[in-house]
Image 1: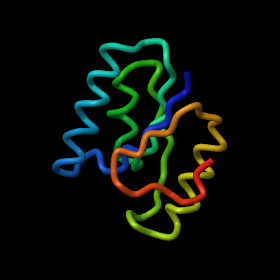
Image 2 (image 1 turned 180 degrees about the horizontal axis):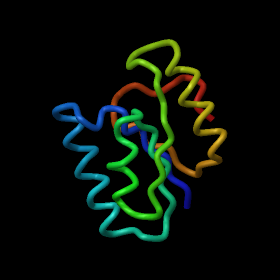
Image 3 (image 1 turned 120 degrees about the horizontal axis):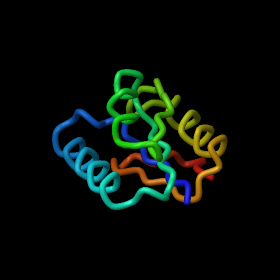
Length: 96
């Protein structure tokens, strides 16, 4: 299964703690699914260290921006994911 997760808030408090713990446990429990992690450029190294089934996809759109309403759905469509997880409460309206 191909799973995309919006990890752009990886370093925030609260939601960032949730994302970090989610990724840590997924890396430990699931070595077969492919995880496409939408992230900031500075987080690529951290994501690659999770394992070979975790792949960073850089997204530079600002939080709560019009740009994220376009860039996130395009990334999800381009990566042909089966499931998209938006851990934050913002979900683009045009998500496939």
